[in-house]
Image 1: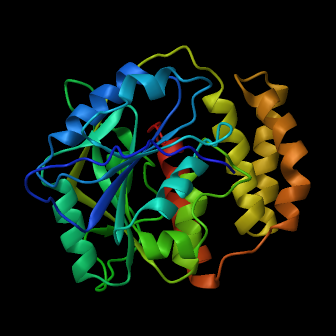
Image 2: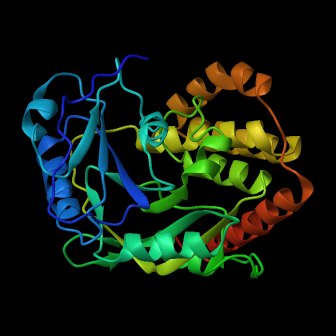
Length: 313
C-alpha cells in the first residue's frame, strides 16, 4: 500500500503536550467536518499529535487541511481503506497509546490524559471505551447504556466496567495490544468492525473496559451515504463465522436469510456479500478460547433480553 506523507507539516508549539498519546483520524470526502474535528483536537490541553488517514477520492481534503496546526502526519492510501485506515495510523504512531476519532468526532479536554493515566496504571488494559455524547445537545449515545450495563463480572486488573464492545470513534488503545492482534480485520472493511477486535484483544489476554469519565463528542451528519445497515448485518455474520461456534454462526446466518426473504432494508445485499466472503472467513476461522466465548454468550443473552424488551441494541 502506497502512502503520501504531508511534507514537513509537524506542528511546532511553544510547550509540549502529553507525550503518551496520539489521535488517529480517518476521513473520506468530508473536509468541512474534518476541519471542525481538527480545530477541536488542536485546542486540547494534551496537544496530541494527530495522524490523519485520508481515504478520499481526490485531493480536495488534502488541499483543505494542508498546514492545519493539529496535523502531525497526513497519510493518503492508494485506495479507500475503510476502518483499516486506523491500522495504518497506529503503525505510524510513536506513542504508547492511540486514541481514535472519525472526521465527525473529537475528545473532551482532559479525557486523553485520564485515559493515558488509566493505561499507565493497568498494564493488562488493552482498550478503553469512552462515553459518547452526540450532537450539540450532548445526548448519550445508546451504546453508553449498553456498555454501562455489561453483565461481565468486575475485574481487579481493570478500571471501569469490563466489556466486549466499543465505538470505533470513541476509544483509546494500547498500541502494543492493538498491533499484536492485527488491529481491524481486513475481511470486514467497515461497519460493526469493533466486535471482532474486542474478541481478539480478549482472546490474547488484554482487558477492555468502559470508563464513562472519558468523553468523546460525536456530531454525525447526513452526508447522503447509504448501506451502513447492510455492512453491519454482513459483518455480524462474518464475525460469528470467524470466531464463534458453528451453532452461533448458523443462527446468525439464518436470521440474515430470513431478513432478506422479508425484504428488510439492506438485508439482501448483506446476504449476497456475506456469501461472497464466506470462503475467506472459513479460511481465517479461529474460535475464541472458552473464557472469552463464555463472556460473549453472556452478552448474547443480554442483547436478546434487550430485544425482547424493545430496547435498541
